[in-house]
Length: 602
Image (tube, rainbow, N blue to C red; front, side):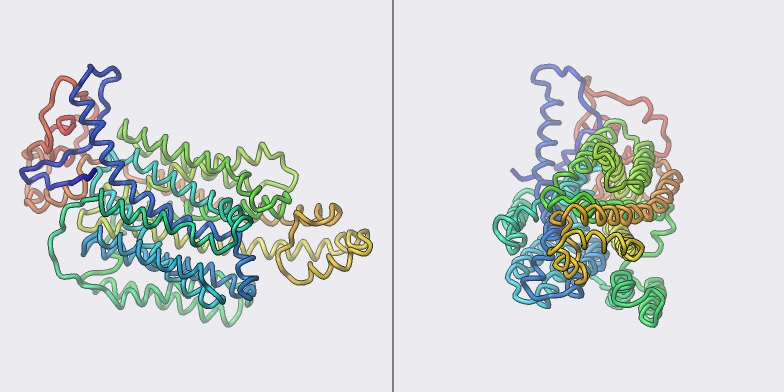
């Protein structure tokens, strides 16, 4: 079934989504209840393609995390190739996100989304046929370009068809999809690698991506955008790519390939700073800037960006280091490690879907974001105390708290930005938050990894005598294990003899808890930023409706007078409608009345 969203000024009115729930006991054959159910079903049909597209893009990145050692071993790659396989995808995803967002404000968004799916599908299939590390790195980079488009454009298209007030419950679905892909991907990857081989980690996503492409084509119909000449900020793209690339490459390789304080650090960090400064100058002069710096004049956007950085660190850090904790500090296999992280998935699923529904029902969002930031801080702090023998019930509670905090904040920060952004800048505003979340998360994870490696190296030196004694107690197996440890590769803790295993579990638990401690200050900063977010009511107008209202020159009339003169976009109020008395007393919500009385739009 197709859904066609039209301009509120046309003769065919937009079948807007209900802003208030129908009475708890609707009358039999109540037309209002039937209309609500039909509208909800059509929205879900339209969103299904977006959800599938975002799911497959995130899954393709996380599903290979547990099989990368096997992949690089089969392809003959070393530690350097391992680093670049990961970094290439993160680089292109982060860099391409604001570019896709800017293009979304200039051209057809649906076509762009389908183009991103095509790029992603082709790159994923090609990566599965790789015969050497260099080919794999190249196709993973191309895959990241498509993934950046899917992540950015799904949020923009959602804003086109659902108002911020109604978007809460649907945002919960996006949060749930991200949760399953981020934390469940490593589990699926381990199972696929053990059962069919690592190449199927790339092929398994292809049918889902093709299904997403077909569903978007059939069910998603967005209003045509006004034709305008697209001016692409090519110089801004180059400068952003150079500065971000240098920064992420430096964070990824510092402390491993070279020292943190070295000539390489000075060149890369200096180049990133110079590139960022030039990027700012170019954006200030560009007629169509890639990231309009005027966005930072909006306090909501700036504070949401700051808060999103901490959310990104928690989300990416948990998926990487909780899996390592289960394998290296508790001796679990990759499959077992995925199962043991289910408490975090549960926390994210419950909070993202439950809080999204509450935001839609009440129209209030700030209290939920504050609670989410508190849980994020608490979860990060508690995870920084874990040891190799910490009761797993406690670890599960800590993971649940962290997951709940991420679920409450991640998608809702995008929601509040879209609520205040200009309709003409909804693409760059949405992708801007996503970009800084990805960038901050990537840098944070790299720093956490460097801290983990440094701490483990220190502990190995401190406990050299204990390790030597454990090796000596193994008899003929001692030299074999000593040779394996000297290779510098990550040890297989699950297969170690008991005497050696306890030592390494304790060391890695100590290092991983130290890594989570790094995330705590960022979580506190996120809490402070959310506390100071302006309490702006959620509008009931979609991006398309707001854009048409602006084109009708209502912006030249005072908001209370001009907006109140707009006619309802759906139907007149009837006896079944429920009016929230708190809404009428909210002067800042006057723009919401652009389609008539609030509940008349039901």
